[in-house]
Image (cartoon, helix red, strand yellow):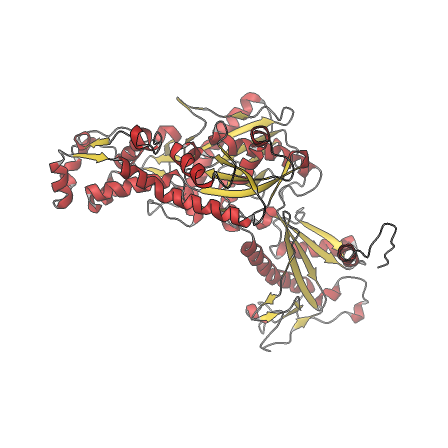
Length: 614
């Protein structure tokens, strides 16, 4: 089990991106000195490609990764063409997308392998700067994730990080997550205040345009350089790789589908080289201005063997007429950009709509794709009358990873104070003797969601604390057989909570199962509904990382009874570890008092000096 204390000395933030990845680090003794890695073997840059290449099709040995795995200029002779295939875009599997991928390869293995290589570099760099530092106990890893990740995706990333050797334990407290727009918002605080004179109460939007995804969220600037999220984060797979896909679609129309399919299957390096060259020569410098554009020529004489595999038909006839050259014109490139930019503009409009009557003071574009002059121009043209300040920070590619380090330095302090480090949602769980229920609330909004929908179709604030088992009292029959059982195959099991507390033994109900099992089984069923409600109401929430459970207990409960409830909650899957800080207790009269005080204030019935008895 992980230690409940985290004694961090160094924070390392990892920006594991769809197309490019990087990391940054800082020592807590000098938090303002954040170092972003910019040397990758013989290559320079703040990020390295999220690409990995294996020795053979067994995929057991890594041949190269990052810049070293990029496709080289192919030979003009087909027999000399390197048929080894770089594996890329594997992060998209976590967003339920399926890029072209070897059939026998598990994307989780590729993520783990890539993180292992990145981790080896990180450990070496940490050792150089702080020799003999205990990496697994003194280093906090902050992993950035898209806003659209659900609990399942985050759990996979945690498992991959563990398999990669970034943590010693799968549920280590030395690995925490933050969404990319949240990290970017933290990083952009100072530029926003200086450039746009933002003050507490003002709101701003972060549009994180990366290689694979675009993530958006709005935040309010608070006092003491703090922020709070005020909209539901949104996003989609409209990053710069979307333009790459459009370019491959363009090649498909020019070369024929069968040619592209053959390249994808047998000569993937060649296809990727063509894409990379297009990115360098066309995509990155594209401004959207027709006067600045020069047509881009793809001379198929550079791939002479390719002519032999292009089958007869319209495509071959047109290529022959063009002397085996393909010309990429202005309108072609503009069309490749416009589809995804239209989607991004729609996402920005959705965020503004969520603000309702609240004015958005600034939009900050971050991420590698935000360096596109055409993307910047389109967004400014679309929203400059609605939002006065639309800007791109210096080095937008590293805004997320720097914000991740800043977040980690803050989160480390919170963990050492014994508080959960990354709470987004609070769930109040009223586990009663005869009736139970739950409520949820996001920390950025005071609105409390009260669950009133119970299986199969009942609409009440609470549900019966009853279970219905099979005849052997092993399994709950199905989801209908708890709370409101419809069938009576066995005697319903109820009042099992009375086995905790000060009730005399002879007054405790007789049960056909152990009372701990009944409590655990009931909490498991209740927990499934809680997780569904959290997922439905708030996107990107990791239940075990971002949710604080507050369980109300009778005032008479001793530490022993609370320990039993904690054990049952752990076994029910409500928390990952028995001593998790994500589960706290409050007594029922305390919770009732807090609620009543709020209501009294609401109706101006409570004044200073008032006395409440409860």
